[in-house]
Length: 96
Image (cartoon, rainbow, N blue to C red; front, side, top):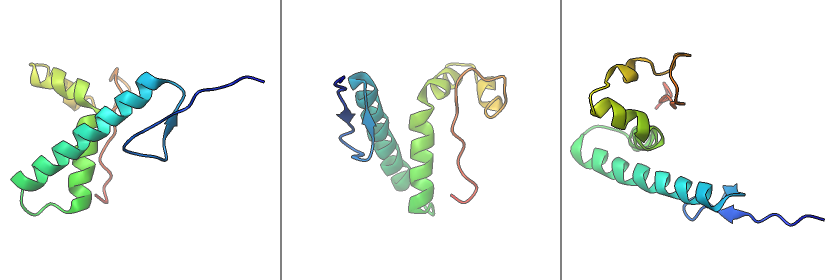
């Protein structure tokens, strides 16, 4: 019988990972999402809590493509959702 180590997320106890690095990266992404959400809530009046959380998760989950766009490759943002983009981008749901 094999023994498998499982790592739990500190911020989302429902998530478990078999790789410590994946668990740490997930926790970092959630921490970034929380901080972006708090910032958005403070800076933009009128957003609902659900919208703020969705925006925070979208930015945190796609920080690499956003970083490239901010460094001069803004056309990458236009490819979001197409089959051409190299990286997986999570869209904001219409109900948010």
